[in-house]
Image (cartoon, rainbow, N blue to C red):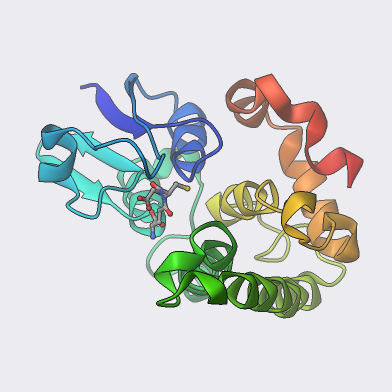
Length: 215
Ligand SMILES: N[C@@H](CCC(=O)N[C@@H](CS)C(=O)NCC(=O)O)C(=O)O
């Protein structure tokens, strides 16, 4: 069966595409705009009334939310060892980091990229954006400390949480006064290791040179 992924370059759908590449899935990309000026198609809104991507369509339905799609695909294709199994010791940490990434770190990025969702008047956008920068510093520091000397976010085992981390690192933007990735040396090290994976090279090929290796 063929997965279908509502997709745009430089968006959260890239992380899901990387997983599809990792599991060698047959998939089709559905080009989607994430611009606030562009209306979403009725088909897309029927699947995700929020109008954001990624949305993954599979044979029995469709789901949205990066963290949920990541867990869904890893569990559906366990032979690729992208996630600890339900009763593995590291399963809890895997879920912890996925939820932390999607609820806390993504939210902090949203304050930079969509400040109008966090205040009611345009004159407050700069304040929301400034808080976003502080928040990103706080949150990435937590991740950096947790990685410590380990090879991966779960310790010695690579997982889809590292792929997710890579995607979030690529959203650090000098234009938004975000910290550079090498402010967090352990995060930077993991991102550079993840970048060697063929799945990442394929999905991020068009702009990989601007990414984490330049810090
Ligand atoms: N919580 C969602 C957020 C996804 C998200 O923010 N997607 C952005 C692109 S990176 C988007 O579609 N933005 C357009 C919009 O929010 O209207 C997830 O993790 O999947």
